[in-house]
Amino acid sequence: MSIWGKVIGGAAGFAMGGPLGALLGALAGHAVDGYRTTEQTPRGADDQGRPDQTQTIAFTVGVIVLSAKMAKADGVVHRVEIDAFKRIFHVPDHELRNVGRLFDAAKRDSAGFESYARQLAQMFQDRPEVLEELLAGLFHIAVADDIVHLAELNFLRRVAEIFGFPPDEFEQVWRQHGTRVEGESAPADDPYAILGVSPDADMATIKSAYRKLVRENHPDALIAKGLPQEFIDLAQEKMSALNAAYERIEKERRG
Image (tube, rainbow, N blue to C red; front, side, top):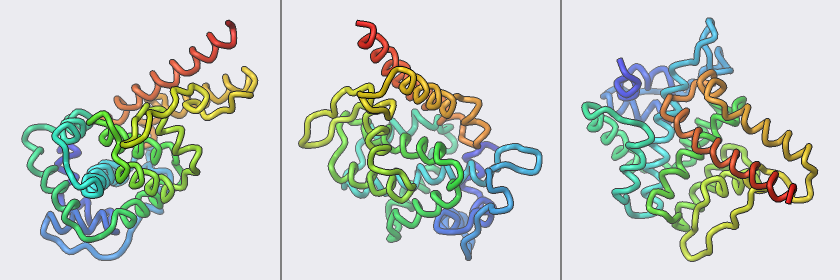
């Protein structure tokens, strides 16, 4: 069964618990009680070291649900945002209806997005890079229409806060996407901000920060942490931004 069949399956809701599990259970026609996390596998792996499927599903469902909530915050779901979502996830045609059901259910759900974000923050509390990729996926969808609306930016900033990212790390993710905010000029194309270093840092410090980011975003590292393949592909775009930022700094320092 593909991950999409598992996402909509009732068993996923029972295994996951919390608001994400309750939403899945409602779609599958089951009641899901309690707030269960996979504490017995805190690093997101089974007893053989493989990524925990429940947490992989939670990651995927989290992006769908938070995307729906973000669309609701903006007030309008743009076609390009839907297309961006489909590009990220490569949803099979036969599963589009089920994914659409989940998106629509989340959009109509009266529960605030904070409860879903908190569950994801707890599930991945020991793997902030997974939460960062989730935030990056939301950014990718938000910028599909070439601009981030203020309501979307406030939504993303609040999600980042719940995930435990300080303002400078949120700024770093924002700049990596080069996004323009409604009513404001585009953020400066600052390679130092993209790498999360000070312009006054020496080259050794910059190189160390760059290499750390590359290690954290290497496809093998992300696969081992249970991210779906679709987000491995998306991370390649981030790698391109990191490489370009470092090469620009090197060139400026040599010049």
